[in-house]
Every structure is written in structure tokens, then in C-alpha cells.
Image 1 (tube, rainbow, N blue to C red):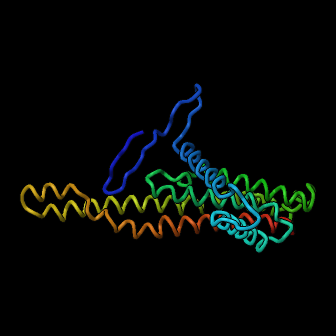
Image 2: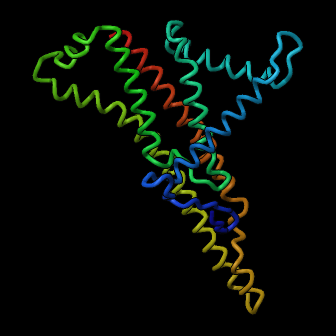
Length: 252
């Protein structure tokens, strides 16, 4: 693991490809994703430890509140019959949020890699298709591609395949753009610090010009949007689309 100090922000760079067990390659996205899963698992174990019926702890109160929010989100948007989706949607939301925000500690967000969102979208697409087949049968599902007329079949197939593609690319594009913009901001502020402090004559100016003073504070304010707000919003949108697509599939 290499430590690269860029401005006031510390980045931990994990080798992109690490050969393990012969030809199997483990990417940085996979390593950080495992870290995210470990963090979420540890948090769940901590929140659900020593549950009580009476005189509950603040930790249990937080756990119950989070569960209640997940229940309201799924049931409120899809109905009581989709209660079984609550664990999946809750896990998807938490994984997305933690993956989005992990860049705050210098690690590359797994959601800045299209393969992550693509995998999520494929799982959701399979669930949507399974719900459509369950509702109208295999024959009804295939017949749906020929409506309103048979000549529309190729376009209907493309429309069906566009669902996972749009879900993946929307999430990926917004997260990656935030990562890129933050990187550009840090780079620009570092250059501005060097140019500004370099105007000071003598050795003092030479020394201070090497310190990216403007990188301290200003990026943190911008991070409130690009990391926190955008991270939560993209996770919310992805989960909302998941619930709505599956609920609509049950009505077709």
C-alpha cells in the first residue's frame, strides 16, 4: 500500500491488480467493496447486540428507527405485499451510501467503478423480470414485447434492456463526476497556493509555496454537496427506482 500526500488530503492507493491464487486478479474496487461490507456487517452486529423488549438502549433505539424507516420506504412506495423487499432494499441503500462516502477517508469509492453499479442493476433487472413472469406468466411476458403491434418488438426489447443500463450509468456518472470535480478542485487550489505564496520574496516564499494552504477548508465545504448530499441522493434514487420498477412489474 502506498501513501501519497496530495495537498491537505491523504490518499491511500491500493494496487489496481493483485494476483491471487494463480490467474485470479483482485482489483482496488473489490478490496474497497470488501471493506465496505465488513464495515456494514460490524455496524449491524453492534446495533443488534443485546436486544431487549423493555428499557432498550439508545443503540437499540437507533436500530429500530432505521428498520422502521426501511419499512416505511418500501411499503409506502410499493405496498404491503412487497414487504419481502425490505432487507434487500435496505442493504442496497446502506451499501451504496457507505461506498459513496468512503472516498472521504481517501479511498476510491467502489461506486466510481461502473462494474459495481452494473452488477447491482443486473440483480435488480433479474428481480423485475422475475416479477413480470410471476404476474403474467412466461407467455404473457414474451407477448408484452409485441405490443401494441409486432413490428415494435425490437424497440420493446431495447427499452427493456435500457432499464438496467440507465440505472447503472446514472448512479455511476454522478459519483464519478463528484470524484473528478473534487480532484480538479484540490489540484487547482494547490496551484493557486503555490502561485500566491510564491510571490513572497526569499526563502520564506519558496518554503510556503510548497504548502497547499488553500486546500485546507475550502474543499471540505464543497464536499458537503459532492460527497454527502450527492452520495445520499444517488443511493436514494437507485433504491427508489428499484422499488418502483418491481412494483410496476407486478401490475403489468
